[in-house]
Structures are given as structure tokens and as C-alpha cells.
Image (cartoon, rainbow, N blue to C red; front, side, top):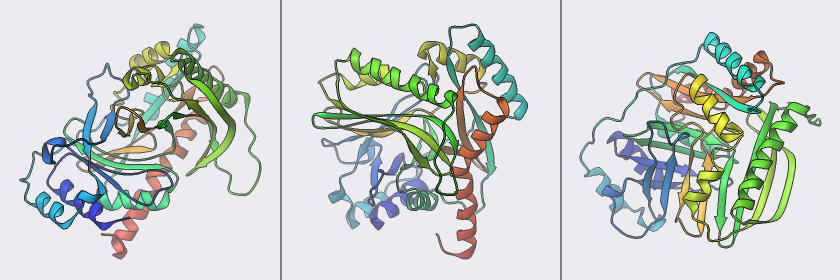
Length: 365
């Protein structure tokens, strides 16, 4: 990693300038994107941060990706000279109580029992006290070090507030004439020892639903599947998932039109998609905002790297809101689903505790 990106991110954060710092899975370098009004006008890639539900009161956010050669001492000095911007919104969605969750769970099952809905994702919000010395950029660096196989990001923008995440789920990746799509669904606790994973019919069915959705979209856009690998078990932080990777012959389809059909997948919405979205809007009890949306960079032509915004949190004035969820089907048990959300929350929760310890010891900062 280079210090220029970290230094720039800290300046941008302190001045409330819209930005995103991020790192792709398996990489060591950081990337930086800034609101286009603060950078030189030229052809650039775009950082795209999209909300979960385009019909809700949330908008797509676009920022300009900074080329590595631009990250110089002069660039840093120019950032220092930008005037302080208006404070970033720190309003959070309300925390989900166990009673709220159980009520929503019952309503989800009632919808599934009607016969038209096979699955819908039920998520919740967990509040955590923000440590007094919490610094979002230092926390981002900690996530990037600890979760090398995830897409790790930190962003702030007046429309979205501040988000931090380390997501294991690729939505779409395109380079030249090949397209890669991931199906990630079905979850259990990660094993502490080397032992085989056994998947129940419920989790296998959840995964098949996502596969079917992806393959239907690929057929609709005449994308020929070159390779299908999976389902295999993949581990991410404290949980394990079933994963299938698709390699597809890319065509010249309009990216926004393709994404409108692909996202949200049944892994974050439901199946059928329309019914799942209706269930979420009516019974989940809050606006997900950018949780389960997507984030990444693209040139809107031949290069696309977009990831689902999972294992994430929103930063408030004195609290952190962690967002987690799981798939509800006719075979779901409320206690099991609740425990699954606790496991998923540990991706963020445990690092908050670690960050606090490091700050007290003077290791990070």
C-alpha cells in the first residue's frame, strides 16, 4: 500500500469532501475516487456506489477515480487548500430489536406460505458504540490487512453518509471479452478445524435459486457461459458460503440494463425477485439504503469491477450501524436465522474491538 492514498483519505475525511478509498480482493494497493468537482476534468474510470432499492429515497453515487500517477505531493497540497465542506450526514437507520425481527420473520413466512414467494432476505441493524478514538481511515486499513480476499472500502458522501465494508461477494467483473459473475448463497458457521462442510437441503436450495436467476439473466442477454465452477465451499471471516463462479463470453449489452436485471439477486433480495422486493419493502421495517447495493469501479465499456455491499456498517455521530441479513424460506427457523446474523456481524464487530485496543496501545493512528 502507498501512504499517498491514506494521507489523501485522511485529508478528505477531515474536510468532509466526498471520496472513496478501496482495495480489490488479493491486491495490496489502494485506489482513490473523489467527487468530480474537486479534480481535474479528463477521461477517467468511475466509482459507482448504488443503493439496494432504486425506488427508495436513495440515489446512485458516482465519483472520479484518481490515476496512480496523480497521487503526488502536489496533489496532497492541493487537497489541503480545498475549503471545508458541509458536514456529512450521520443519520442512521433505527436499530432492529429481537421483537422487531421476530415480527418481520412471521410476516415473511406468511408471505411464503401463500405460495408465490420462495425466499426473501430479512436483514437487521445492530448498533455498536463508536469508540472515542475511532478513525474511519485507520479502521479501513485494518480491514484491508485482515480481510485480504474481500473488497474493502470506505466512502463518505452527502447523499449516503459514511460507509465502511469488507464484502466477499462479487457482483460482476468484466475485462475485455470475458465476464465473471458470482453466486454466493447458503451460510453456516465457519469450522475451527480442518473438517468437511455438510450442507443442508435448505442452504443448497437457496444457492440453486441464485444460480437459476443468474443463468436466466445471462440467457436473456445472450451471454454464452464458458465455464461454471461450483458450488464449492468458500470461507469468509466467521462464516462459510456455497459459491458458484461463472465465466461468460461478454457481449455489447448496455451495462446499466444488464445490472438492472441482475441486481438484486436472490442472495440479497428474494425469489421471485419482484415478490421478494415487495416483501422486504413491506415487512423488513427500515430502509436498507446502500446495504446490499453495489460498489466498485467501471469505465461503462469494457472494464467493470462491482461488488455487493455486504459485511458493512454506517458511521454515525456516536454509534456504528452494522447491517446483516439472511435468507428466509419455508424451512427457516427464527433462532437459527438470528444466530446467523450474529455470526455475520462479527466481520465488523470484532474489528471494532481490535481497533479500540490498537488505538489504546498506540499501534494505529
